[in-house]
Length: 246
Image 1 (tube, one colour):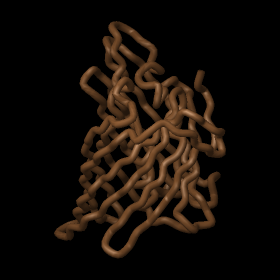
Image 2 (cartoon, rainbow, N blue to C red; image 1 turned 30 degrees about the vertical axis):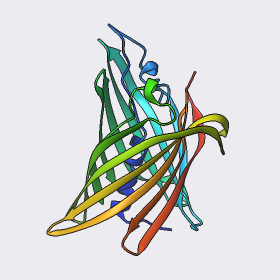
Image 3 (spheres, rainbow, N blue to C red; image 1 turned 60 degrees about the horizontal axis):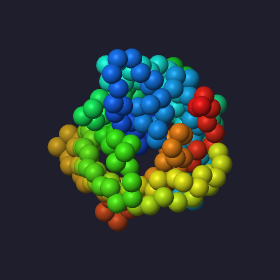
């Protein structure tokens, strides 16, 4: 299973969808307190495998917190994302930096990344993504909405995808992935509508997303169904391992 440069670049934003929420504190604080469903301890590391339904090869993603701090109630963090070629996790096909800012009003996430192998850049991505609401709100029945904008460049062609996303915490349930069994995971269902603009061409797509988040660890599983006309694609992302979390 091979992916185009634009698909590899777009993959870099996915880990930011289930992201960060504000930490209410005065003066200097612990970045790990920003949100228990996405700990921000420097050095924390998550490894995910993602693959399309029926595909043999999976794509390896690694997310690492490079730096984080909290000052006067505002948490800022820088996270490095690396994506490997499908079936070749040792070959880096894309990298991105995610920057997060959390304050009492919510969260801002930006992504800046490139795709390419062997030092050659074949695609780029820039994104603004919504994050999670405050941890205290994340209870069964809670709903919220968010907007996103993703810009990709592939072979000189610019594509801008604008999204409107509605999410709901469905329930608490057990989930099992290679990293372990977690009996108290939050199951969150989201529906996102996308408007894709490429030159004068405009297309629409719809995503249905299920995510399982665990307190103290973060995202452990994500299932995504993308439909566009008569075509539909289903992918699953699961946590393989994690480290650097207390």
